[in-house]
Image (tube, rainbow, N blue to C red; front, side, top):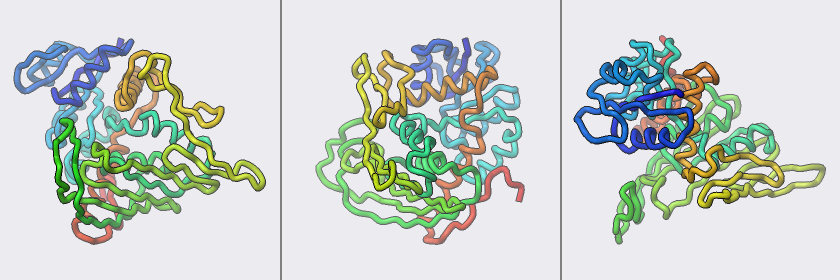
Length: 345
């Protein structure tokens, strides 16, 4: 049994202990909270108290970005591995300071789960199998900043090289019927900001970022993802490719239903299975599937049974590029380089 404790008590922290209660081989042994409260796991008033009393194998920090670095550093100083919620620090200076303090420790992973969501995992499988050739462009219009960047980098196979960013913003009326709390009851459109950015990852790889305020929850805006390759392209849940001489085919990605409705079933492309739900019978939604997979991958890494799930360098790069998008949109200038936080220059 691999154990962890959560630092925080918000909705993301609750997701971790709720999932752990349903996963074999994982146990959430406590939560660090500032004020005493009733929780489904033991509550501790400090990281030191939790480490001494619960003795977790690793910590999950589900905290605001402004306080996340201090807790990460405190855990690493005590030799405890950390899975840090996104983003791991508030800004570029904070990322550099965090890297200087813990980057070489190899003890910090970032809880970036988007590439583990079923639909994205299936799309990544299309690219990894070379079904559309060598990828060169990824367009994301569904989620914000570092999450979108993670999708772009993962689908393009881009690492932590410098990136050139150009961006613009505009405002237009949009009705906003849903937010995190549910239906808003709004009946009149309000100004919403759309940010559009182009990202040059080098080596002929490009990204297009298109995001409107609250697009992750506003169902009046489609979520779109496009991957262009040398031999075809993937558009949302369909690919077009050259299948043979004079044979261009279009094939849908089909999401099946699980035996335990509403479970997610396999996602297939013709007779190829691109994604298989490891949590059949638990009725997890897509985000829960991805977060559970990340938790289990982190536990395997901590035990020495698996690779790093998402190293700090990768998570820091996602956030740095997201910050560059905002800077380029705010100033109208091209941000020609992004200095990784591990670069002393």
